Figure (cartoon, rainbow, N blue to C red):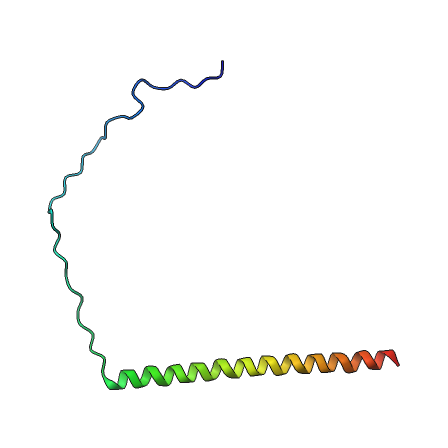
Amino acid sequence: MFLPKYPDNPTPPPAHTHAPADPMPVRRSLPSVSIDQKTVVALVVGGVVLTALLAAVAVTAISVAVAAVVLRSLLREQHRR
């Protein structure tokens, strides 16, 4: 009763056939990038600075967490008295 009605030809022929205009595309090479000593030094210095900043943030976060635990402990003991 509720069976679907399928068309006679379920796969219609393609409307557009693609024919490549150029069978072998020409690959263009990328321009060469020259890296001199100043660029390498700048990248190394930037990496050192970013690593130092990340370490400073981590040390600050750890010290804030320790201070919070100590203050929480001191306040808890003060409320118990």
